Image 1 (tube, rainbow, N blue to C red):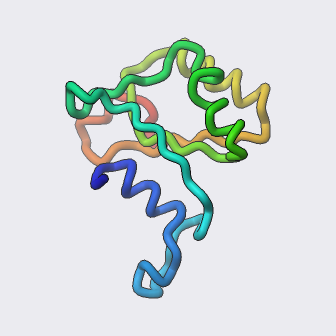
Image 2: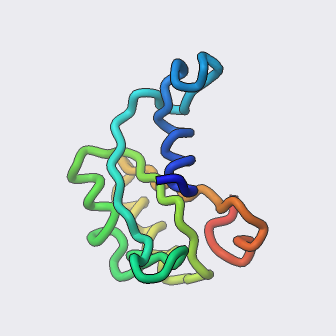
Length: 114
């Protein structure tokens, strides 16, 4: 666990004490759940849950009591996935999906862009 998702999780839930007293995450002490979408056979290839993302992905977190879902994976432009995410958020205003951008300029052709 040393990739982009680990970094993002720390930015969210880190306690100030773990950062040497200098800051901490935006929601220190929050509980996190992890769903790994990286392909086990191909590094840096993600099995984005684009087939009904609400029922196959966001609902996993909502049913566990989450109100925010951080998804630090990117994908090539996919208009129907973006529409499905927007529709899901409209229908479930109690959930905030967050898609942090990648670490490298090579991700500029992928979504989301910060």
